[in-house]
Image (cartoon, rainbow over all chains, first blue to last red; front, side):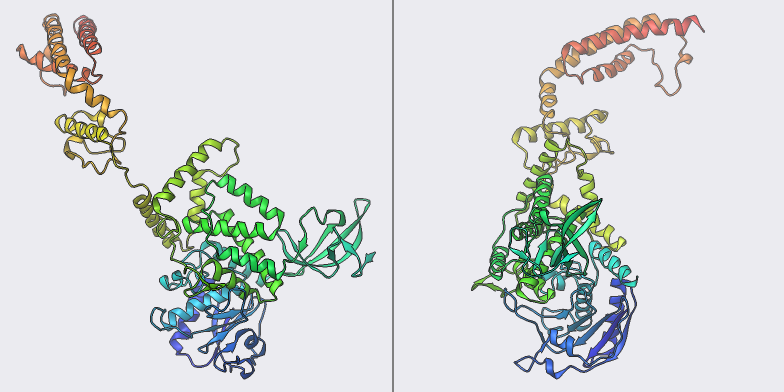
Length: 178
Length: 417
């Protein structure tokens, strides 16, 4: 089960759209779990964005995780992550790779050249849920696991996985259930 | 049984208990100890490792630690150097699948950072040209998984950040720089076609041809992946929805046809030959032998074909011979053949004169008693005989056929009835 928890206000139709798309992409149940609050301690130095890894650690949420459960936190606040050898890049979310929780931001969606809020949030959420199932980035521009900043991500707004990623996620889901 | 202690040296002395190491094809492990295990009645000193990803225990005979390629996690400097290589524009991908497969297998078995990087970069470059077959898609994912794990372990980064950084180098987002140098942002590539590929389409088509040549040259060992299997793999690596897959495969096939199988410009001789063929075909509706393979409509209805579409036309090689042979000696040969055939038929008509006209097979044209009629009939074998476009065979055919017919018809027509 994929559980959606909002960290802020989102229109209900957007949440329903995201839930439907996630269900279609991974073939597992998806429900809107409720709301939680952004932890102030996760605020970055600029006091505007949130440090995503810290946010996931310190979030006060009592949603239970079972065998194959994944929790996706949705927020509209900008996120940051530790800087790597290539410097700072676009940040649309942060998953615990192979873990149970991910945070996805809608920051920047709906702007010029970007996807609309519902479509973009669904695709971003599907991408980060894929990382929770240990899927890596995919070179297929139509696949939801294509890097979020690549032109294919906005060019193909439908939430679909390539055959390889779909099979891999199904294997992982089965293992998770067992 | 277990000898534990940080002072124990493993392999060439560079590894110690508690070190994080890279196990080829397995990922990041931590050395947990050295134990003596009794296997098949023998005592084996084994190094036990714990795979960080899932906690699985791996045991390696102490004597074979260096042989299997176990090594320490790369240093930060080595990772930084690796990113320089990733961000640098790569060479063209190796298109000969056998060479590629052998090289990649060696690199992965070796377990070195450079080898894994080469596999990832090579397959990434290839994926920009055409979709990867299933096995190579798995290899690509495996190489990516190992590199991400090593980057994360070496630089103490979360796995997701490590993967994002890896792809900032492979698929640079707009504005990404590496050591002050701006990187070219990633372009949209359509898998399955050379449209949008890094290399020009003509170049890709050339390489495809080279690839096929290589198939023909070395594909004798057996057990290799056939072209059809590769095509099947190619189709598999598409979007999973079957309905969508069908459409995409069809669209891709169309794109490939449009992009890669563009007709090459004909030389003058081939053009002339084609025109001559079509003119001749239009004038002669019964010349079905000249119809190119796969055509269903008779040539006469087509009219002259445009010179820019030679794809469905006959091969340019043999055609000029036919076209050249006809106009010069064709008329002369036809005249001689007609006169010989007419004479032969006259003789045959005399012999067959008593035969009943009702004995003829139904559906055949009604026989005419007048003399010009046999001459008309004689035009048929003459027209057929002209196809070889040589004088001698035409003469022989025309001379032999009526004689045989006459000999065969005599007993059948008269004797039995």
